Length: 258
Image (cartoon, rainbow, N blue to C red; front, side, top):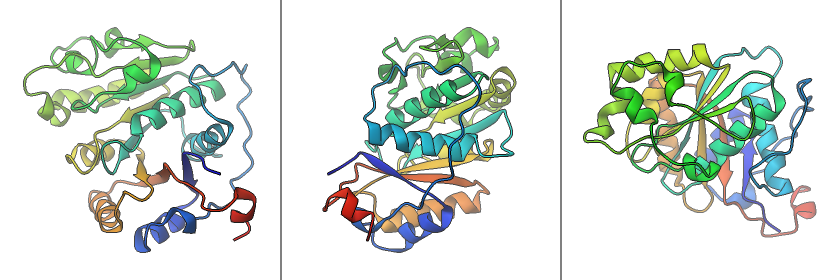
């Protein structure tokens, strides 16, 4: 039996994963706190997820955004350790699940300028987005696209332009982040993989924290440990970690008793 990913339920468990050999069959998630949806009208989700996937995304959204006392206006970065870990997939599902559970507005931002993918997840064109906003001083609302829910918005990557790899570190980008927080109640940023650049660390400094996406049987322990050290050195909080493409070598009912 298998499912695509599992949330590490607390930083202690995440540290065990970083300190020990990263074998998917040895990582056991702790029970999550009971999820109490916000009192809003629930609508069917547009993006397809299997039941196990949906449960894990709900747990992650609850932990990062909906725990008691969590402030509105949160800006959270989602970043993979390596390319191909499913970061855009996860970020898109988190945004839609969050928008189904809150009355406030949710904006998901594609900041993976080298390999944008959020527009494909939502089935919309990638144009007139973040790179375009970075070149002008117009309000950010002019560059976002309404998605499947009235409170869900996408700021896509935008047009390919010369020098786009350095745009995330610009003064204009630093001014866009607080503008996004003023315009939307919740902001999720799909960031570049940590192995390719320091953009995720830079974005994390201006955010509430970062969610790491690791790939079972692929993400190396040494690489994960270095990423955590780099984030801690930059005063960036690790809000959660997701082990993606995980498989169970034994039936799940037995696995949970181990």
